[in-house]
Each structure stands twice: as structure tokens, then as C-alpha cells.
Length: 164
Image (cartoon, rainbow, N blue to C red):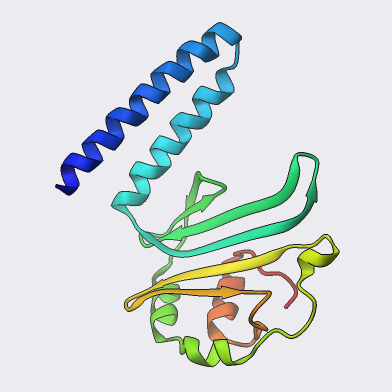
């Protein structure tokens, strides 16, 4: 069943890709096609190597609307920024720390200030993929402790780390 659905999605995506290529050639817009190819590659790659941690930012105003960014570390250590594959890091220590983290302790420290999105800054959301499921930590709902070993390791790996 799952394989049949994946096949249908793949053929649907390829059809959309072909149509967009034809339209792109007709209208002279090759960027659309490149963007769709990047998305297809990213989707297929992340199905093979699931994520370990995803960091997303949203808020503030950029020239094209609301500012956003996305950084992902896959379980094999591949670094992905804004859906573009980057280099590789050694994510083994991060994986151990994520699975050893007491997220209930992190959630106890509630954020009580004004969310930065209210004054043209970003809300940062961390999604950690643990052995027991997803854990989501948002900078507008949790006051992040910069001395927590999880966030220390993320800073050591140069992952997005706002001034907590």
C-alpha cells in the first residue's frame, strides 16, 4: 500500500515538474523548474535519512514578506539549510544528547515575555526527533536555558542559536 502511494506521488510530482518545465521554457522562467527539482531531491533524500533536529524561524519583515529560515540535521549528519543540502557534521553526540534530554524539564521553564514576533524579530522553533517521538520547543512558549547540554551542543555545532 505505502509503496503504491509513494509511486503515485512520484508520478504526480514528475508530471507537475514536466508541465512547469514546459511553462518555464515558454515564459522563460527556469528558476521554477530548478526549485521543483531541488524540492524533489530534498524530499527523496529525507525519506532515506530522517531528521534528527529541525530549527525553523519565522517573524520579522523581509523584502518578500515574513522572514523565514529552516535548518535540519539528518540522522546521517547531513546539514540542510532552506531545503538545500549542505555539508556533513558528526551528529552522533547530538543524537545521544537529544535522546538523553528531559524535555519535561525544558517545558517547565515557561516564556513569560513578549514573543519577539511582536517587535519585528523571529520566533525560533526547535523540533527534536527522539527515540520516543517528536519534541517541539518554541522560543515563544519556553524560555530556553543556554546552559542546557542540548542547546550547548547545538551552539557547538554552529546551529542557529539566538541570544536566549
